[in-house]
Amino acid sequence: MLQCLRLSVVFEDTYALDAVNLTVHDGEIVAVMGPSGCGKTTLLRAVAGLQPLDIGTVTWDGRNLRDVPPHQRGFGFMFQDYALFPHLSVRGNVEFGLRMQGAAAQHRTDRIRTVLDTVGLTGYDDRPVHELSGGEQQRVALARTLAPAPRLILLDEPIGALDRDLREHLTAEMRAIFARVGVTALYVTHDRDEAFAIADTVAVMNRGRLVRKGTPQELWADPQHEFVARMLGFGPVLDGKVNNGWADIGWTRVATDLPDGEHRLVVPPHAIRVAADGPNAGTVSNCAFRSGEYAVEFSVADVTLSATSRRRFDVGDRIMFHIAPASLLAVHE
Image 1: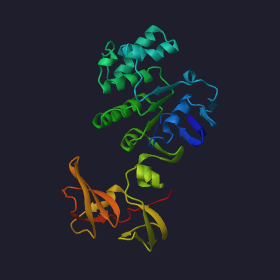
Image 2: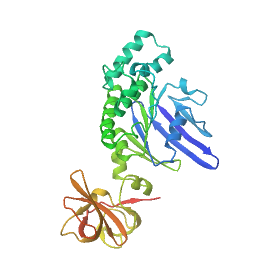
Image 3: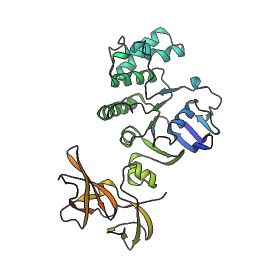
Image 4: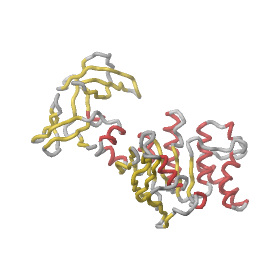
């Protein structure tokens, strides 16, 4: 089990990590999600031993790793650019970590065969890596990371450079591979869909701090923080007042189960339903066809909302909609 206790890293006067506490249990995949500059890669490097800590402790099964160099931690690291050796074959790349371990020749041969089969590259042993597609190179990098059987795998946006369709395909493949192998992993990404698809637990970072942690289902049902809600693609943050089961958000009232009082509220994307008999009306500002439906953006009293519709709208059209009862969520900064 990996434990990060109050990890802090300061660059000049800026906290790249600010008292981060994070636990990764054996066999768990934790995705660290956040925008560029939030500290997620610094966290990964600190766990790997590549970034010195100003404050805090990284432990594995209770052992402090502060004085353990990166190559002795038993962790595997997979980079976004894969860092493959272009002059070596697929076998040569996958074998590298095993040679560093001093593994015997027969063990290396057996292990290479096993991991190439695991990542779907059986028979690729002698292929030059520079002749492979981006997805195939990603699999080679994963095989090289898995070959020494690391107790923890660290992945820094490993498929971020690929196009979306290939990312979605490889995310599903990696999740299946991790499940078969029983991998413990810390996976960095800025992409919500990628994090939700691959991880058991998602940790959201902002400005060096870990602001929310939970399963994808828990984060979606209750983001808690304004920042997390925005990362998840929720609607705008609205000031509202709840009284006797109704939330007044200025331009409409919505039935709610929130307690009475003033709240900061967000509207989940699925809560807005376009309907000709809707009690609310907005003005369409954008409409684009995506995945069999139209994604529509529209404004209501200077607030921009979004919804999906089977009907196409033109910019400037009037759109009618409902907000589902009990759908508003309370958040805080």
